[in-house]
Length: 70
Image 1 (cartoon, one colour):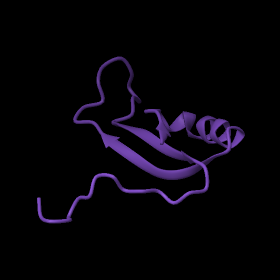
Image 2: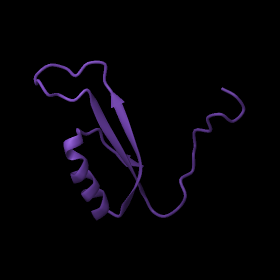
Image 3: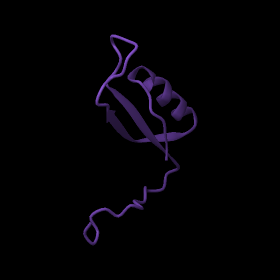
């Protein structure tokens, strides 16, 4: 898996770079921040983490949440 936290303005750039590297989209995680921070009137209160997968094999879940209780 490959991913990096970005602002929404960079989503197309990251998708284009991933396509050039033959990575396929896997998921999009949104980090909703409690406050947007200082420095800009229009600063985003969230960041995106697009995840990409290399290869054609099926993704194997190595976490196992929900199996055998918590």
